[in-house]
Length: 367
Image (cartoon, rainbow, N blue to C red; front, side, top):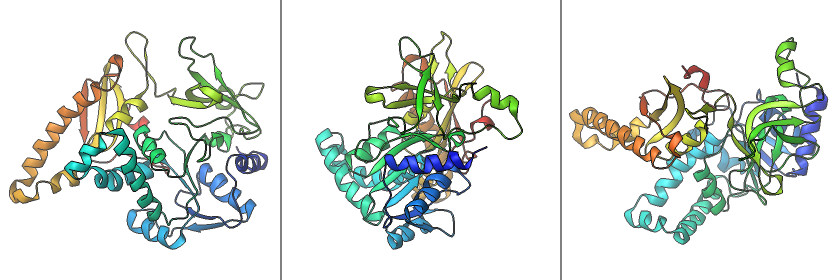
């Protein structure tokens, strides 16, 4: 239950992070039924007298690209999946598609130059006037964020939940910190409850006028997440870095405890998996005590490579997918710590079921 006070507080306090002006133009690409878009993408710009444009259909590339060209937005709100898809399907192939570019890309100084060139093209794709591209709703892939930073793309990260109307912490493009959501928003208190004495990690608790009144007609569930002195238990694990910048480790309910008590964060392993060739999306779960990666490859992309074989295209493509499955396991385990290594990689032929903000419905796949 979100009160007018909750929403008005959030909608005005966010302006201390990023100002919205009357001449700003927003292009809305997220569902208004979601608190993220409703408060920050609707109420806040209306307060400031800004202009909001809406798409008539879901933001597929065929719909979104012409809209960007026409509207030329100055402000946009997005979820990670959208910008990650643009990076993997449009930006990265253009940077590493040719052998000599791929060779240059391995050298940091040239990689930054290539990222800057790609960033200019990306800005042009978004209409050339963008000054704030807010990302929230899930963890952004660190590799994609690194590109956005080096490309000088005006991105910023925010953190919040529906129960907090939604924003709790955030930055603007001038003070982003890799893999951090930034400090607490003005008027919001954040603390790490019972932090680990070694890592400093623990559950994030929040308090402020943006915290909900409770769950509708569910006092039992409300009492589980709201303390008597007003702290909301977010269910997210995090740690504070320098200047009280918050770093999210993952969802408490998603965390897997290893055989020797180690904390394993599936989201961190998935970030590695999603940067492997042809991977569209993935989740990591535990099955019978083993870490299992469930992966959805871009089968159309793989099949396209074998079109010359005509009748045998299916056979060649399926063989290649099996090879990729084996390669992927080695790729993952070479890049994660010892207790986060996966034992199996299971291939999914169909995309995972998702929420309105494009997050995978994990509960459907945890056995």
